[in-house]
Each structure stands twice: as structure tokens, then as C-alpha cells.
Length: 121
Image (cartoon, rainbow, N blue to C red; front, side):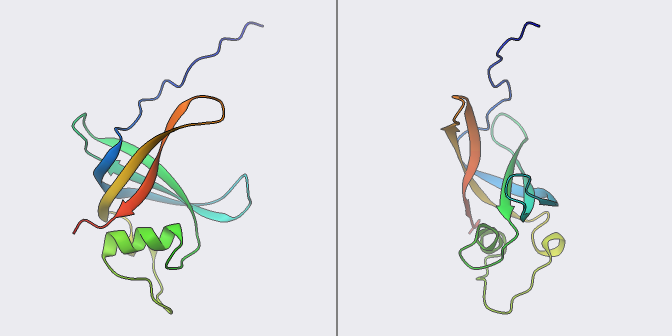
């Protein structure tokens, strides 16, 4: 059998801050760690046209958790004790700025990720 190494062919999202809208949320169990996580798809519109980027976050809701920071960015509200959210109601189709960075993975390929979620205002 002959095998050929092919470099990462997917188009990288442009780096920097972009207006993003949460267009999909999938609740799943992490294959690597076995914990509950959310796969959050963000649709952006850089100059190159509409693009999507995914962010995987633990389903832990605290002020400094990734999910707490996303909630604060899209709602402009702090995460306070006793706050209960519904991801479909409170996050889906909501917008924030996403700061996208490129990084080199262990296999040497360049990939992308959301570095930070920021409020629109």
C-alpha cells in the first residue's frame, strides 16, 4: 500500500478580532477526557466571505470558565451565583467578537482556534 502525506488543506480563518455569531451548539461527551462539553460553531464574516470556526468548551458554568466567559461576552452580564442558563435561549444566535489565532500543532500543521471572546460594546 502506498500512502502520501497531505498537508492541512482546510482554509485557515484570518487571524484577529472578528464579529461572530453562535450558529450551532452541540452537547457531547469528550472522547479524550470523558466529560461533558459543548461544541460551539461560530459564523463570522471576514473580508473573504462567511466562515465558520468551532470552539470546544467544558460544560462547566462559572465566572472564569470558558463557558462563563462566552456567556459574559454575548450577554454583557456577569456570571453570578445562582444564575441558570439555557444554552439555546441565552447563547444560540447571539453575537460577540472572537479573537482568532493560528498555532502549530504537534504534527507540525498550522491550525486555528478562538483565543478570546469579547463583548461587542
